[in-house]
Length: 495
Image (cartoon, rainbow, N blue to C red; front, side, top):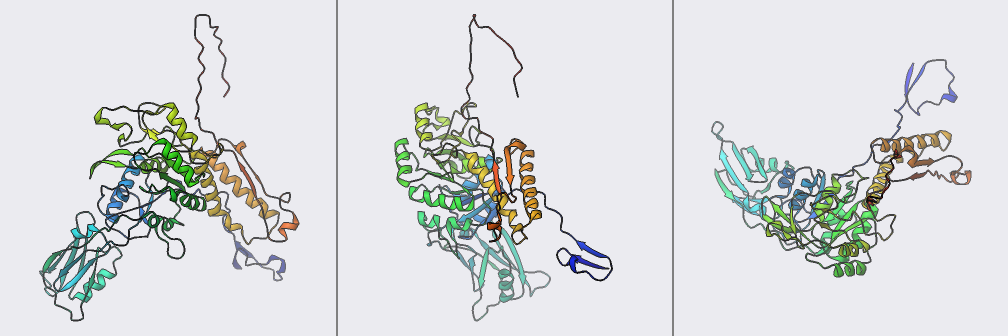
């Protein structure tokens, strides 16, 4: 008896009577859906790697990776904090700089220590070298920071300590040992000279594509469903963001400048030539946020919109979903001021007709802050809703992640059946989870009727998939007839 893996045994050429066991791979009946809540966030920070996506799952992760939050509109930490409060929990964050940022340094026992990353947070690093009480030839080097944490290394010489630090991927500093190696000596040093540089340009936020990706393009291949360049208001960047969103299946959240007017917002959008379901454009009515570190801050609305979408299933719209942590807006003022300016129906109509969304209070459901439109910038009524973008990207991403296994297979009836089974199973699971409405909302065609021999002979196989999405209740009309003369009839309502 011999055991074979699937495909290793040619059963048509057997000549020896025997037992042949083939191990077959488990049949794939459905694909696991891709992540729909992952947010790709590009911004500034006082610490952390530049142009490298960092996995963030909590505010603690963010502080450890990028240092303390700053009172700036482009700050990564502030955006992450806002989005987490709305329900988001999965981020890929990319730090950008203008290239003039500097790493802090310190000198200890004749050796130079340099902060592992540029930025002002490095100025709070403290390096302490202490002689061990029992083995006096050995020393402990501790590098600590109130927010970034501390790292400890042991060794009898500077080269040993330097090697230990170099081997630590989370090290807060690096050691440069001079040619003439000094002896270890107890002491401490506080780093200095670190700086954040100036504000990056729009081009630096967008970054460069290719082998070495920077800025926004560092989010390629990260599986982000939502993306934002936090605080970037340059309308010349909007169509570039749209192109990345379409290519990556990422819903880009853009915004206008603080204190914008409706007329200017519409003019900026038209001038940019932005008309894409891949971008959600938020009106430049910035929001007041009570930050636990920096107090009341005026912040762009992007992180609120991204955060609420990041916590919702893809068939859900941001429309009328309550937002948290908002204490006012530029139009309404701070809640503590007692102002109560609201948007008129005409103002909202002007924004929504132009494909621009806004966060305001009240919402249709009551006196709370919410995204008011739930729309993207597409001028097509069929594709201008949050849910079209999110659900289309979700389904396309799910199929893209799993259907490639069929490439290289022999084109035959079995292949057609397997493809149909996986697609139907995947869509059926979406019905079961409420993403799609019913089993009648999808259809799959993959057989000889849409795969003629003239095409399969060239290696082509086609699967035609139709999916009907569930609509969003945007215009709720209740007809009320009242009066003493009204004749009331009761009937069982159809489901």
